[in-house]
Image 1 (tube, helix red, strand yellow):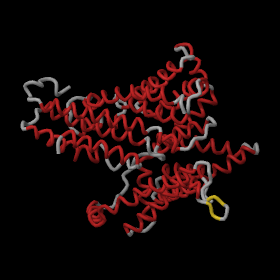
Image 2: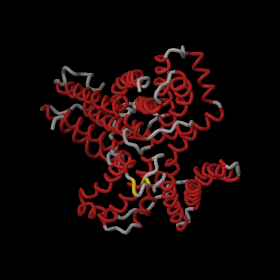
Image 3: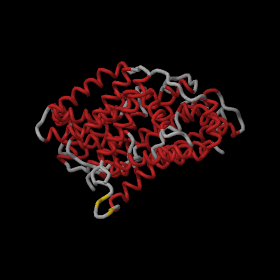
Length: 322
Length: 142
């Protein structure tokens, strides 16, 4: 039976492969970074089991590993990795044409199938997919299926999957870990009491017994933080630890799934307003030769504002209903 | 192909692709600069008069904005992109176990609202361009 741990082991194997390729090219920082990360993902299960049995050492080692990752990340320079030459890629693209989309589309398709029907697959009384985190187990399986399909369609050797995957991974660099670390930031906030401190602050400013006031504070807070930081991902743990969990979910009984989903897209509205989101709002100004830095923001802010209003309404009318 | 049809079709396609996790097949550098912006300019010039420089810039900026909106309000519907996983991971840290699919589905109403709102704005934007330049002086560049 497939469990989420298998997905993590698969990732660990891929990262170890990426580390190995970097090691052979003497790119020490990258090799060490992906190697440590592979050990953390592969050993996560062991660490948790040891921690449950009150053996502290593995958890402390994992903590040290995270610090090593942090120390290595500034050294991850974006070197230029050799891609196959453009003419060969062009020829392949002409030969394969739309077939190329097949493997890419298999990923969402298989993931969705497992998420929807995975629970029904039982062989000899053993469930094929373990209940916890079935969607993500499905995603990992989908990636393997897509990898096999892509190898079959392109007739490339399966090893190409590792080589190209590693190229993408090195291009992303430490940014590949951003969602992971920001989610962990939520845990750090909880452990250090930042969430409660924020909630106390909010209590002084708004009438927290009013659900509407809390929804407004959460939604508008998400937008403001996103505008300042240029990224809704960074705003989400702060606001959800400060207002979402203690006030909306704890006090008013909001549905966490709906609150999280709409809260995040409310933050995305903020991304439409801010020059801090340079990738989306400033880079195209340069790409398109526009004379005003704010041209793209000017073109999209009204959609963002209208959508913000819709999101606040959706949040207010949905989170307390389900 | 008229300007609103082009931009609205692109918006819908971008959203649907993002919902399938294919966020990187389109983008400012991949599609907007080489494809969408030039096509949008050509479509806008079907009104019979060439675009002024200000109008040309406005059309390009609007195309770039359309790509952003299609990306942002599509990707959170896919179960395995950063946004949904961050939400799921955050709650897991606090002892609330959620299925990514549930989180993703609740991003759907906003995705639909984003499409409707931006499609309406696209129609209004092209209408403003349709008016002869003399009437619209100073407006098109807004």
